[in-house]
Amino acid sequence: MIDEADIRIGNYVSYFDYNMEESVFVVEGILNGYIYNSGLPRSKIACEKANPVMLDLYQLIKFDFIRGAPEEGEDENIYSLKYNRLHSLHIRYENGCFQPVTEAPGGFVPYGRPLVHVHQLQNLFHALSRDELTL
Image 1 (cartoon, rainbow, N blue to C red):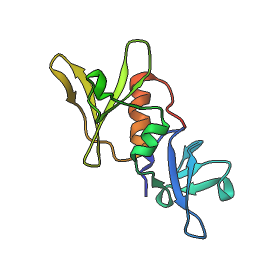
Image 2: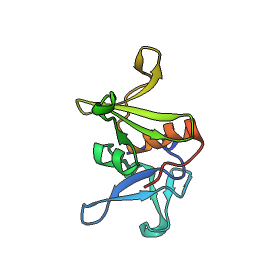
Image 3: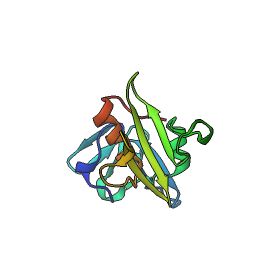
Image 4: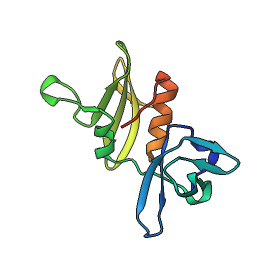
């Protein structure tokens, strides 16, 4: 189940179809407890039947995050995505945990709570850049 207030248009969420296979889709609309997408059966699904998509390293890389290069003095556990000419979004991946970090004079420091779901990463990126993070 996903809370209607946690998602926005453009987020990736999933549902289990009649064969109990997970299908991921993009939110095209949200209204009165329903999530809309033109590819869904009946073009909508109740929020309580939709699920957040778990974030994993494969998805982070598909979103064009680049792993730090140790040979260039970078931390190999930090994945970065440049979103304008001056700023990047950095995520530290350690022990199965995705922690947003920011550059500071002493190195990278964590901020916020760890990310667990794809829509959380998408919403953080949107809040920082005003751009959509899509595959």
